[in-house]
Image (cartoon, rainbow, N blue to C red; front, side, top):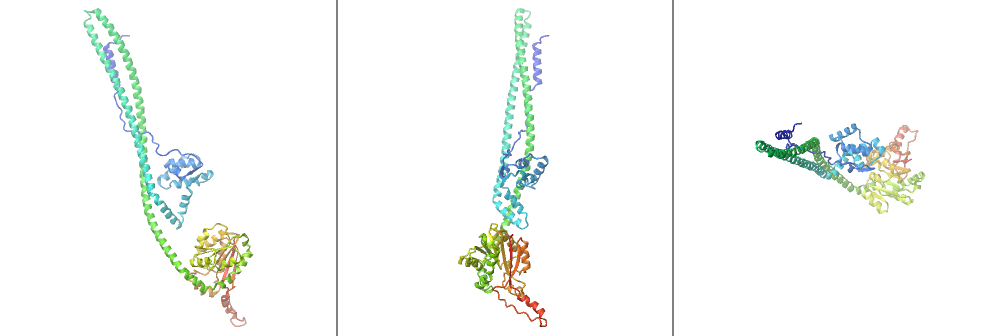
Length: 547
């Protein structure tokens, strides 16, 4: 194999260096590794709080709900469905968690989520007519104070995510710049080695030319110089071989840099998608903030309405309190003195004893107890009893007699009592003052608070007596309408009481009943039918049993 001349070696080195541009620099438009954001991995456990899920959003929230509540990974259709409902605003975190927790599958695992039951119930109650609106207003008022804080927290959270993304981008750009600088230094080093080799080859070529010119005159010296030149050529070849190895390494390094750049380009594409998502989230946050502001306006309007309604209620209550003493005087005038009322009420002692309800030792509750005549009779017979009346004057009179009486609306008082705490519930001349809805509520609460076998006694004017139904009933301006005996008996039975009966009351009642005509007189039969309506008992009672 022919040895290459110095000129050929120089040309080959130059051509190889020209084919590889180690000084080229790659341009980087921007890089960003995948950013995990704030959605961390949830801890699996037996119970959670609602706050454990508030760290998550979108599909990550849906997947967390599947894995934590249903104890399984989500199916693709379910994940897409629930994520779409979250993005559209059709549902929120509370609706999503409640739907999962109380689904048939959720009931199997029964994962406890503290703080979820109350807002779920409030939303269910909020769908009720009228009451639902009041609940939504009240709930809106309660949440009003936290609107700004939650909006500020949301804005701060978003600013934090954008800051972390920007910091991460800056760090990656700095890493890329550092690697590019190192590659540039390597390229410059390779160029320097190649320049020195070319310079050495050129000097060798010049030396060979000098030897050739002096060859004839100094052949021996030229031979020595040729040997020296050959030695230098061998060294140069070794140097070139080393340079070739460096070039191969440079190529590998350049390939690695290209792979790294491609990875960064992929990361930049993912970053672009993340930026689009964050932009959509920002728009959603802006819409939610606008909704909060609209809600705040509505809440302010609701608050004004509630305050006006409260003022009206307070004014009405004050007006009723002013009428309390007047009504006490009215009762004394038209219902008779205490001795007469006691005569009328004494037969109920036998009703209580015959029913056997006193053996339990539970007290008797007298609803709308008035002056307390019935409570005094119960105390004299050593029967535990208490009363409730909304008339402050009546309550003061009862307390002055040492009676256990509560100043409160009767229905409100009953709703606060536990179940099965009374042996009997009595009410003398109250039901004719009540609207239908309040009467039904009174029957239901009496049934709930009575012991099994407990007795209900309701006394009211008897419209079968035409003097009562046409005149006497309307002496009391607070009466609403008379209730026929069979109607009240049916209502008592319809609300769950058994063995209901009607007792028409005449004891202690002198109503001037006319005598019937002799049947032998002409027209006596027709007249006696009318007189029977005047002879009917002026009051009646419906007595029922809770079975």
